[in-house]
Length: 211
Ligand code: SF4
Image (cartoon, rainbow, N blue to C red):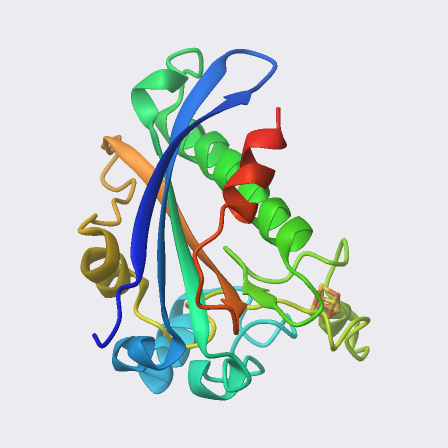
C-alpha cells in the first residue's frame, strides 16, 4: 500500500417502518493502483460462473464486466466505503436469514444512493451489487444495455477480493449467514472513483440526509 490518506468513521441511523436502525460507515481514500493487488479476475469470474444465477444474464456481471484495472484507468483515487449493521437490532424479524436480507437492503440502497447523488461529472462509483438502473437487465431479453455509459459494477464483478480488501483497509472481516447461524453484523463495500485526492464529507453528508 503506497497511500492511506485518511480513514473516517461515522455512526448513522436509518428510519424503517419498524425501528430506528443504527449503522456505521468507514471510509478510506486510497490510490486506485493500490487495489490492483486484490484483483484476481479469472478466479472470481470462475466462482460466479459456478455459483451465481446472474452469470451471463446481466451486462454488469461476469463475463461482461471489465477488470478493475481497465475500469478505473481514468481515476487516480478511490474512496472506499464499508458500511455495517449489527444484526441484534432486527429482533422484530423472526427468521434469521431475513434479518440479514433486511440489513443488506438498508446498507446497499443507502450507499449506492449516496454515491450516485454525491459524484460529479468527472467521478463514478463502484456499487454494492450488479447494476440496478433498469428493473430487469436488458441482457435477460437479449437486448443491448440501456445505459452503457452509466451502468455500474461491484468490486466482485471487477475481480476484486473484497474479503481481503476489507481486512486490509478496515481490519474488518466480512461475515456470512451460514449453517443457520446469525453473524454479529453484515456489511457492504462500495467506492467513489475520483481524481480528487482530498478527503471531503460529501458522501457522508448524503448518508446523513437519508431518513
Ligand atoms: S443499465 Fe440496465 S441494461 Fe444496462 S447493465 Fe444496468 S440494468 Fe442492465
